[in-house]
Amino acid sequence: MIDREFRVRGVVKRYPGTGGWYFVDVGKKHAGMLRARPKETKVGWGYVPVRATLGKSEWRTTLFPTKAGGYLLAIKAKVRTAEGVGAGDTVTAHIRLV
Image (cartoon, rainbow, N blue to C red; front, side, top):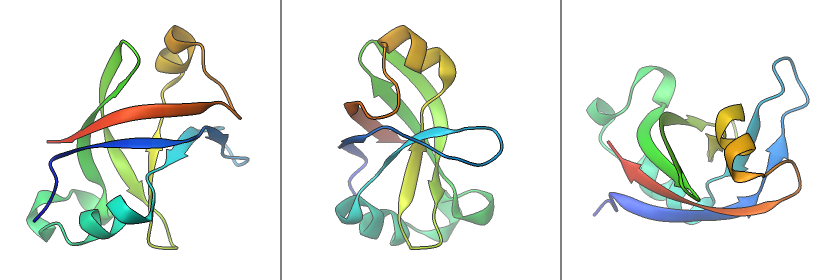
């Protein structure tokens, strides 16, 4: 059975490449469940559409699959600013599959 809602807790990391994305690792427990999600519920390249909430901020995004088999939650600049978080901060986000 696939959990439609779950929480992700992790350290905000900044991707060192072009664009400087900030993200939180979804974690192994949830990554396995997401990989088992039916293929028709994913969008191109295995991205998983979600609605994420961090503090009082909510946004629609996708979880990015990684080469290692995990997933990443990207945190938009607008959300980071509104919630006062940056690289190195530990955050808890609520994820709802859409």
